[in-house]
Length: 172
Image (cartoon, rainbow, N blue to C red; front, side, top):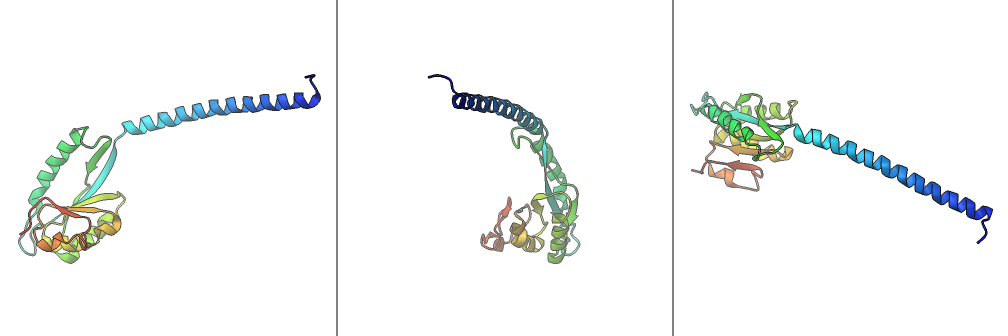
């Protein structure tokens, strides 16, 4: 076919589309390389996951769960030193808190913890069954799991009431 003005315009438009596509592909490739570099740099940096440690020092009923603090520290050392357990993450707590084995104090401490700057992923404690129950009843509202090492009452077995409560200690 003889070249006419409309065919030339069409050919030029198609060539420009191809040029635009190649340039976009190169930009996308550069963008993907940039994103890959960010992901690689981020993947190498550990992300810290914070939990609350709430214990009882035995004021109200003489029950002292603060003796668990050294064991928690040793467990954290082991977990954080094994890269295959939580790859890319590190577990920490900032300070332990005293529930005084009291319902109201444990709630107060829990609310202080969830309002702190570090987002908490879990609560370890609250030191005794009396202090654990109210926190275990509401912690799921903040998507926070609670793990107890000292609360033994069987009422905490009720999964409808205590939705995100777990323990590593048998019930009474």
